[in-house]
Image (cartoon, rainbow, N blue to C red; front, side, top):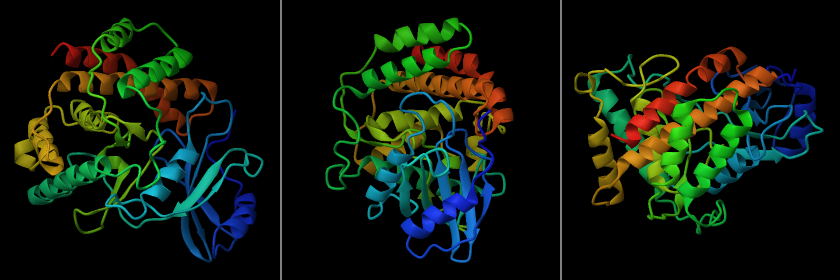
Length: 340
């Protein structure tokens, strides 16, 4: 069984003292228990705090856990309107700790894992959601050629590419037949829009992949860029709407059934209008396709998480097994969105 819970701090220290300016050991490593993709550790030592993101050890699906892409995009965004952690160095030699990794700054900020933001006032929630919208629009307005990301994603229709990729990933990690998932894959393949925008997309944009200042709504860093690429911006927007349609709680992190008006949280329609205003768009047609796609992709992702748990190399094995049980629910919600 691959060990995703521990880190060889001696090996990390030897490498970092050579490759990260000013880095001195020894360090202690504390694993973050959030996230299911790349195991993440906080490093504390004489020269301060750092964060290390690594590929999980063991046999992995092709193209998954691309820490090199995370490193590249965050480096490219360093001087843009998109808040990101400053990256220090990338190690692509698996001999050092058993898999590729990179080291970045430890950004001070608060992580919000519940979109209801229970400890905030109504006005604070409204401000935080406004900031989420501003940052999402900023990501989609990045001049990809100016920051060196023009080749960060292949040419062609983004949704055609993504449906093909995630269908292959899903089939590679499939553990049972889910008729709704098969039907959703078929529907998406015959309803791909002709609108072929090429923008930077985060790929997993949500409130718990952001860090906010300790006492205000400002976002200080967008985290977890593993799924980022050049693609269609409405995929990111639809991903948020998809999440909010799920039940509240530790797993769903949704807003289904929540009195948003009372909490100061915008409706889906209001958020889309805010986004369009931020980007100067007249509106968005055919949101049902984009939301259906978001449910499909999330179902494929968590099926992969489930398979990694069964194979023994999940970052958080217990939660991975719970997530895997939700694949049929995401597939059913995707079909509902498609025909809604």
